[in-house]
Structures are given as structure tokens and as C-alpha cells.
Amino acid sequence: MGFVKRLRQNYAQHFAATRSMVNGKIVDAVTNILNAKLFARLDFERHYLGGFLETELTDARRTFWYMERVRWFQFLAAGTLKIGTVYYALTLWEANLIGVGDFTMSVGLSLLIINDARNLTRRFLEFFEYIGNISNGIDTIVRPHEIIDVPDAPALHISQGRIEFKNVTFGYTADHQVFNNLNIVIEPGQRVGLVGFSGSGKSTFVGLILRNFAPQSGEILIDGYDIAKVSLDSLHTQVSLIPQDPSLFHRSLMDNIRYGKLEASDSDVHKAAGMANAAEFIEGIAEGYAAQVGERGVKLSGGQRQRIAIARVMLKDAPLLILDEATSSLDSITEKTIQDNLDQAMGRKTVIAIAHRLSTIVHLDRILVFDGGRIVEDGSHDQLLQQQGFYYRLWTMQVGGFLPEQALPSNSKTE
Ligand SMILES: Nc1ncnc2c1ncn2[C@@H]1O[C@H](COP(=O)(O)OP(=O)(O)OP(=O)(O)O)[C@@H](O)[C@H]1O
Ligand SMILES: [Mg+2]
Image (cartoon, rainbow, N blue to C red; front, top):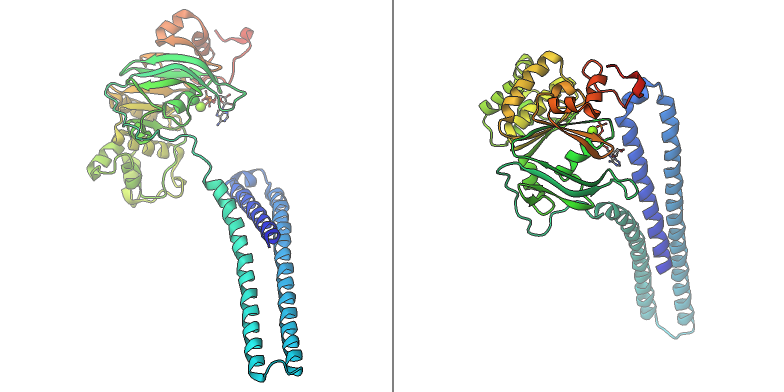
């Protein structure tokens, strides 16, 4: 029985794993359906998925076939037992060793017991199948969280907004480090722009402040608190992020903006929408603030989505604000208006703004230039231009306000 159980459980577990893998492939194909269409690859996808479905089918056949064989074995075993019992009772009765009463009772009882035993083994079989399914699921669910709060983590209170990186070493994988012993202090109320080529570590830098990942060594302090030791919720209520490509809930516009501050009144929401330059287009929609935005916000344009995300963050009004190219999807006139409002909303907050267009950060207090995970230059726009270093080259290289993807060969500099 132990052997049957083990085999059954393994088959079921394997089948469950294949099934979830195939489901993942299908979800991936469906989410990328636009790509498949644009590249005219629907047939390719059909074949690609067909291969995986075939694997699932093979596994299913093997599992069910095994179960069928065990069932047949049980059926035959029970049948033999029943016939054997009746036959044995008959011989005993023939030899006058038992009477009719004994015969009926013992045969009746034996048949009852055999039937129930067979039912029981059948239930066991199903039971092991469920165990197989569940252990596959549990493997996925109980994988330890990478980032968890220490027990009784105190809440973070940002009163000033001073950020310090102390000997921070971080890499996504063990063999590739993004930051090696990084030290930097951002003073309270400072507005800091981050620039650098693609892959230089800007998003990783803000990801570390948001504790999306934990550094391998070193500390990140906000107002003297080590963020690894405070509760994640308290950190996230006091740090706002406007991501590059914000996504929205499939709920009303009102609910989406109010997400920044659940207890905000309708007029607060309208005010925030006004500041983010979103009020006008919202009022242009027939349902106004009650309009549903579609899953992930698909019913809005990129710039509209971004303005809703900005309104949400303005409502949240956290003391630390992080912008990842927050105005990248906007036309230049809307951008100018929002930039002014953002500047106003920044107030005395500490602000970190990632920019691919230097024009959006020239007016900030300080610019950090990232190169390959190091901060190679640090200063205001004017200071950095005077240094005639890396930033100066970026400034002179930018095309129509945009940074090139990587360094141009030095002789093609457009100075
Ligand atoms: N999730 C991840 N897993 C593994 N490596 C990653 C991951 N995210 C980023 N990296 C690597 O870390 C390095 C820094 O990436 P990061 O996203 O911080 O760059 P960035 O400066 O924000 O670039 P961009 O301007 O293109 O947004 C890159 O070498 C990148 O390949
Ligand atoms: Mg980035």
C-alpha cells in the first residue's frame, strides 16, 4: 500500500505541476496577444502552446491510466475474495460443519466487509491524489517571503526626510553586483535628480529605498531609522512613487484617485485631479468620476493614466516623493503645467526624480550621475556643467532633450 501511495502521489504531484506550468504558458500567451498579432505569430503561438498541451495530456494519461489499473486490481481482488468466501462457506455447509443460519450471516457479513474495504481503498486513492495536488500548491505558496518585517517592527516616522545609504552592497544575483559599497546622503527637503545610462542602477536605487529588495550588506537610513527594521507598511505610507508606467484598478476614476487617501472627501479628490491636470479630461467623459477604467487602466491613454497616478500621489501627500520619469507620457504643454503643480506639491518634501530627459531635472537642487552602479558625479546642474565631466557629455549629447541609450564614441560628440 505504501508503494501504491507513493507512486500515486508522485504521479498526481507531477501532473499538478505540469498543469500549472501549462496554465502559466497560456496566461502568458493571452497577455501578450497584442504582440502575437502584431508579429503575425498566432499560428506560431498555437503550435508553441500545442506542444505544452501535449505534455499535459501525456501526464494526464499516465496518471489516469495508473489509477485505472489500481482500480481494476481492486475490483479483481474484491471479486476473488467474494467468490472465495462464498465457495468456502458452501463447502463448510456441505460438510455440515455450519448451519443455514451461520451460512447466511457469515456470507452476508463478509460481503459487507469486503465491499466497504474496497470503498475505503478507493477513497484512499483519491485521498493520495489530493495530497499530490495540494503538496504541489503548497510548494508554491509556502516559499519564504524574501522581505518580511522583523518581529515587533516599530513604525517609521519621517519628520525631516533625510536618506542615507551606508556601505550598501546589492546585486539581484550573487554573481552580479549592481552596487558595491555605496555611500550617499540626501539631505531633508532636497530635490534630487538621478541620471545615467540605461542599466546604470537608477531604478534599483529607488527600489532599495522602497525596500522592494534588501541590500546584501550595509544599511539604508531614513531620518536615522534603518528601513530594514521598521514595518514595511509604515515605510510605504510615507514614501510615494509615481512609476513610469502606472497601472490602475478596474474601478471608477474616483476610487482610483482616492486610493491615495481612503478617507479623502469628493472635493479633495477633485482638487487633486485638478492639480494633476486630470480634471478636464475626466469631466469630458460622460460618466465623469464614476467612469470605470478597464483592467489595468486600458480604457485610458498613457498620459491620462499617468495623470490619474499623479493625482493619487498628490492626494497621498507623503513626505518622501519618488518620480520615475513621472511625466514621460505627456505632451510638452501638459507636462509643463503638471511640472509646475508637481513643484508646488513637492513643497518641502524630499524628492528623488529619475529622468531620461535632462530638461525635467535641470532645475532640481542636486543631480546624481549614475554609471555602472556608481555615483560618478554629484552636484547642481551648473556645477556639473562646469566640471566638464560625465554630466557635461550627457548634456551635450542629448538629442531633442532625450539621452542617448549609451555613450557615443568620443569622436562623434556633438559639441
Ligand atoms: N529584476 C532584476 N533581476 C536581475 N537583474 C536586474 C533586475 N532589474 C535590473 N537588473 C539589472 O540591474 C542593473 C541595474 O538596473 P536598473 O533597472 O537599476 O537600471 P536603470 O538605471 O533604472 O535603467 P533604465 O534607465 O533603463 O531604467 C542592470 O544591469 C540590470 O540588468
Ligand atoms: Mg529604470
